[in-house]
Structure formats: structure tokens, C-alpha cells
Length: 209
Image (cartoon, rainbow, N blue to C red; front, side):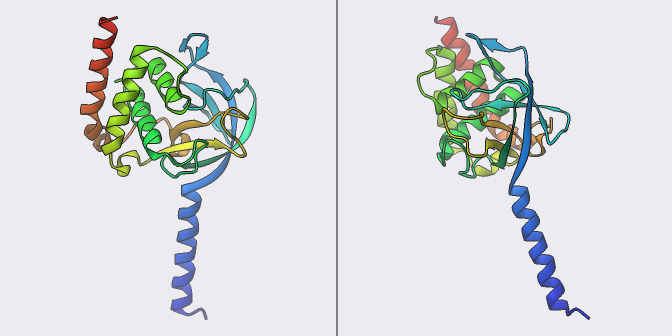
């Protein structure tokens, strides 16, 4: 008969194993098609994928210089947005800013096209001179400086295995489980003031020409 101590150790080991797999896993991504948003000849959020053969799921690309084609598939590592395992290293401030912009796009505070270009510009500086994009990046980075990591719970990166900036498939931002759910209400409430401020500054900048 197994001892209680052994059973407890087994349960703990299985729990830790499950937690580790939940925090970082490998999936197969198939690029189905882009959405209808585009600017300057580039499609922007959403990009639709099938994950492990599942239903179409929208994600946001963060790798401007990497290219993909419809029907292409690859293996990607799924890890937390701030895990330090992304294609662009462990600069948590840039990834936090990208997460803030992504959540703003998802809740309708930020234009999908402006938002996606702003995320691209965080990791590939100088790709645009669009005033709204530059203002959004500036303010998202200011917010990111003070935003606690707990506010980004559930946001994940889909990083191509073996991928690097400028080579191979693109990296994408989404939600854990690749679902269509929006951020938790509490998180959005804490970030909403900053996001509304960003939207207002964008409008004023555009009006000034």
C-alpha cells in the first residue's frame, strides 16, 4: 500500500508539472487569413489562426519584418507576455506597452490599425512617421513603466520555435487558450484611465495635423 507521504509527493509533482505546461506549451499554428483592416499595404489586426486544428482565432502580430503566407503552419511556444521568452527578448516594458495597446484594441478604445502599427513600432523602431502611432507608443510606454505585471495575466505570446526578428514566422499576441475572451474587468478598470488619455491625445494630435 502506498504511504500517504508518497501520495502527497505524487500529487504535488503532478500539480507542478501541470502548472509548468500551462505556463509554457508548444502548439501548431496554421495561418488561415487576415482580416479586412489594412494600412499602407499591410494587413493589421486581426490575423486568424487555427491552433492545433481548432476554430479560427484572432491574434495580433508584433514582428513587422517577419512574413507569413495563408495556409502556412509552424510550431510555436506559448508563454506569458512577460515571461522573457518572446522573440524580442526580456524587455518587459516594451511587452507591457504592447499588452496595453492590445487590450485597448480588444475593448475598442484604440483603432486596430493604429494599435497594430504601434505594437510593430515598439519592436521595430522607425517603421512609420504616423503621428497617432508615435503618440500611442509614447504614452503606452509611460503607462507600462508603472503598470504591475499582474495586470497582464492571461496575455500570451505565440513565438515560433527557432524564430528570430527578420527571419521565419511572425510572433503573435493573444489570450491563453487562444480564446475570444476580453481582459478581466478589473484589469481594464485599472488601465482604462491611461487608455482613454491615449485616445484623447491621439485625437488632438491628428486634429493639429
